[in-house]
Length: 60
Image 1 (cartoon, rainbow, N blue to C red):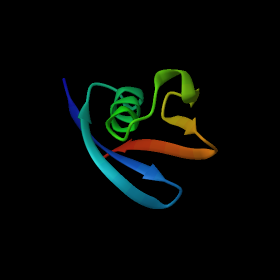
Image 2: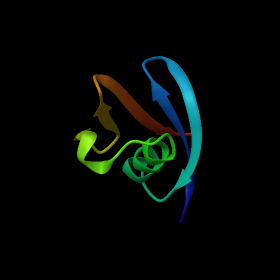
Image 3: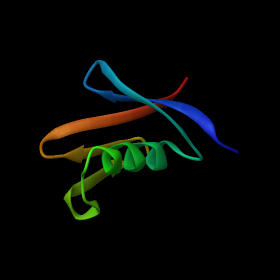
Image 4: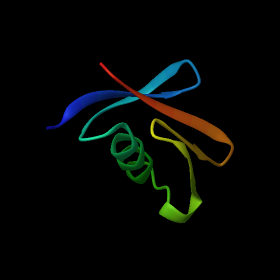
């Protein structure tokens, strides 16, 4: 089942993604802005880092 997730950079919402998991929502968002998989550091089930920025996802 796909849910809607807010993707945030710090306190700012940067995207809204439909995905099966928060991790999938984050990865799909980062791919959409041109990020390669080898540039992403997974910090947990709901957080990743890319070029020093931390992105989180939470259901809405």
